[in-house]
Image (tube, rainbow, N blue to C red; front, side, top):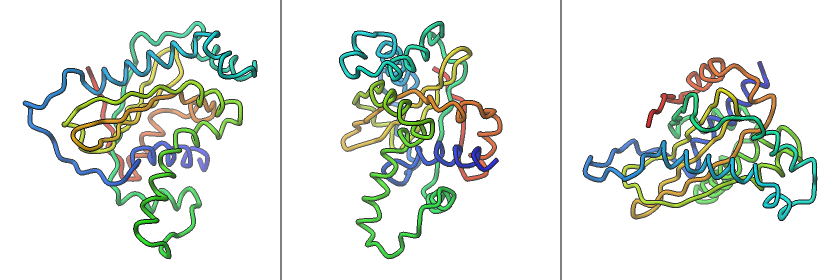
Length: 220
């Protein structure tokens, strides 16, 4: 249960990238041409393409163990359509409890500006931290197999995680971070840590919700 709670805390923490959630919604007139669901699917397709292209992988690494991890993630798998996609939202008030679960020391002595900066850097690296739990090769594999994009969507006024799960495939996590002028920065990668993926999804959802997360299923 301790490992389950830690893994859930890591996943929950991903939704806190760059700070608080405003909870505001843009007018219907500002609706984008593509939904976040579709934006995330495009990133997922790019991730799968990277993992399934040996020539591309060999350009970035000569480590056969690393390339084999990615090959196994796509070989014989089906990423055409997600089984379920979850949207995860977290209030900033959950920050301290999450850091406490992860054994991060108190930061009360730091100036607010530096504490915010540290939070930003810490949460930017959380997807890699999740995969790093599986070892150096898994971390190296996901570092190669990461896709990013920037688009405009004024409706995105809070930090979000979309977790794509598949009937026959590795989970893919996509983070959406709002910026100035309606710009959104999105990044996606596999969640390859075996133990993380081995926990029951309902169990993970229960832990996340107890920590204050709002988890909803997303459709196109």
